[in-house]
Length: 436
Ligand code: HEM
Image 1 (spheres, rainbow, N blue to C red):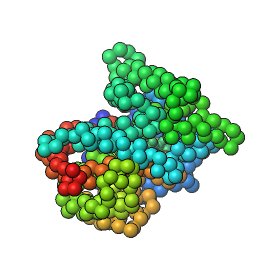
Image 2 (tube, rainbow, N blue to C red):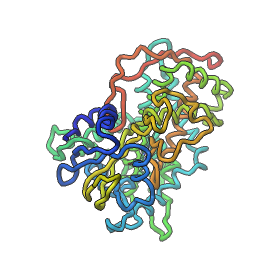
Image 3 (cartoon, protein in one colour):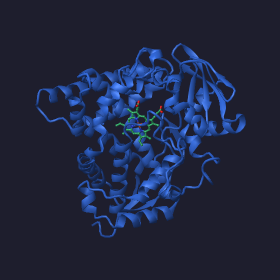
Image 4 (tube, protein in one colour):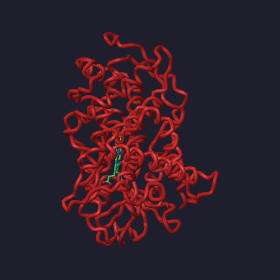
């Protein structure tokens, strides 16, 4: 079976159809280092646990799963491509790097990140036209790019359009199958864009190192981080991680925000209930970056993660021959777990296609059932940051405006590797009563 092109144009249909036809383990082929490799799809909660649980960490490798696409453009020295397996001779590499990066994601920094995010959100909302359809998908892309670029490495506003352009070129090269630096090919453009982004990041770092400007809080944490043995991040590692964070934290957040808005457009009763929850919050305090608890908004986000995870599946390399449910998986194969399938699994979620935030009302999902942010021993390091940003943007938008969703041009999606709307997602805004 050679399914890669079909799966890579929009994996959602093939994942559901092939699982219905072949059951919860099936095999496709994928391009990996060294040529075509078998990719074994392990679907459903029990299989998710088999891939993600700490007990099985020695069976699988992130580096072997992702290096083919990521290493040429992001370098090897990033959290994503580190493993702890002795089999790879990299014992503790992930743990050590994680310890240096995690201080930048601490909860106690929320109070510093929120006002900075709020300022950026306000800047874009101030510029929105009223009474005419606006592409909300394009809006959230601009905001999420600005937020990561500004908060993570202090990008200057005037550099953002150029940085975004380079970054889009980088993304296009990520999944190109031909890794040749020949002018005209996506990989060539991506490599050039990478060089330019790296130069930009190096120049920002140099400004901070010379004391000509204060680094943003996030970067200051990384620059100051010190491991138990006195280990620090080199400038080269800092630049590589920042680029990887930009990749991991921009399109993902934009994809999920667009899905939330589309779900609100499709479910007016959810939209109304959310507005009711937010009604008690003063707009001024949100604009200043103060956000009280919002349990219904949180449930809407969790339900969106269940039905519309930005990353439909994730990949690992297999480090030794293993058998799962009588199925032999060989060393060198790839395996994949799918948050998209798990979230729609009728064995786990009753009436799975119904968008119902109340299914998570004061209830935690079962272990290994909800994986929009990964899970097990190595979940998304940026989940807290992403949720903070999404809650803030949605609260500000809905406190300030009434939104009439539609008309939409289409509901076509593309895979990049997050799910994105091809023709945007439109809504018409009017000023909300009291927000004048
Ligand atoms: C809605 C937004 C986001 C979603 C849906 C998301 C999703 C994910 C998922 C599914 C994984 C695990 C992949 C796997 O198992 O192979 C992951 C890992 C990761 N994410 Fe996120 N992410 C988001 C935002 C962010 C942000 C804002 C950042 C950083 C600023 C970030 C940085 C990372 C990193 C570095 C990893 C690798 C963790 C490790 O190797 O230990 N993500 N993310």
